Length: 218
Image 1 (cartoon, rainbow, N blue to C red):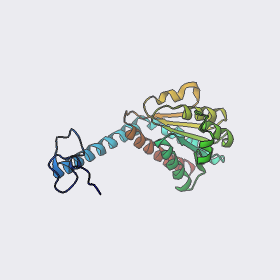
Image 2: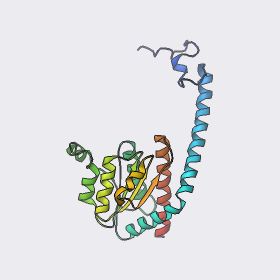
Image 3: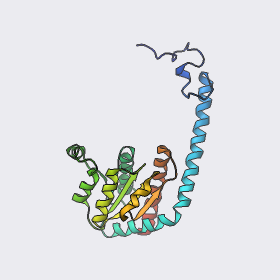
Image 4: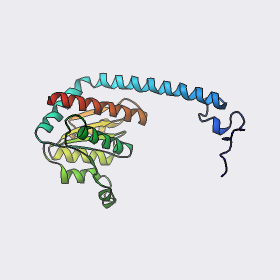
């Protein structure tokens, strides 16, 4: 087995294996560890600051959104969460949170199976809309996650609105476009250009909504 250049025990100072943060000015193992610790602290502070700003910005919108979702659940509605890429994984977490936490509410992540995605491979832009058309009903809830506005997510929200569902959009920069056409009842746009920070803030918003929904339902 060939060792990675510069990664062995005799690697010279500043070798690639001990210098994972280009431009940091640090060399050697101690320098790399010090840089890593500093970056972790900086990112933690950045995340906490963003979450505080998000909750302050949306304080007056979270309660009405949660109230609408609680009313939908009380009426027998189901939650459908969806998003593309990493937001698709986050949508899975949202569905699991509502389905498994607290009283356990009916929640699904779209698409519901891989075969469906491959079958619709030629229908770009309609992946979520088609499943909502098949599964959604008036009184259900659509929660769309996006780090930016995408065709699939926008089409999904439009279909949900057409079917009389409660629509919730949680997005990053440019997410205001979700509001075009009046397809979103409750929109939360995270003020960050970092995809990672946007997704972390989205998780915070979803957890707050989960908590408020349960309080509203008693």
